[in-house]
Image 1 (cartoon, one colour):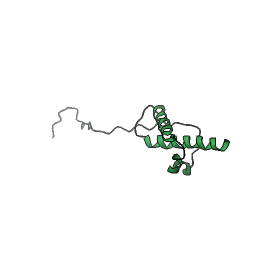
Image 2 (cartoon, helix red, strand yellow):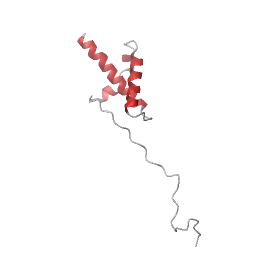
Image 3 (cartoon, helix red, strand yellow):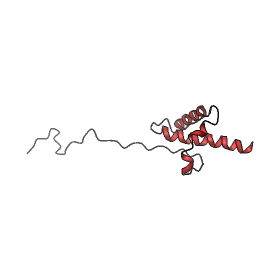
Image 4 (cartoon, helix red, strand yellow):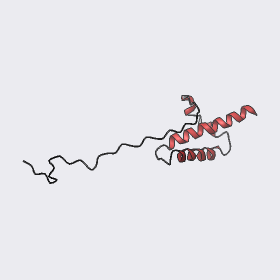
Length: 95
């Protein structure tokens, strides 16, 4: 019979067991996104001066709203891009 160093008779649990990853905290803006709006045309961002900085600031705000949870930078950037471009398009229609 093999000897147990712990003496309990049960096999030891591995200390390298993986912990489940935390799920992202959704940020609901109340806006509906279609598949075509998720990937806007990159040329659209070049139509407006300083828009990339505005998108960058908004993406960081989204990151902070999520509790500074890492791993969602692409989602934050795309959402910020959609919001900022929509704002510019809306202002063009009213002008």
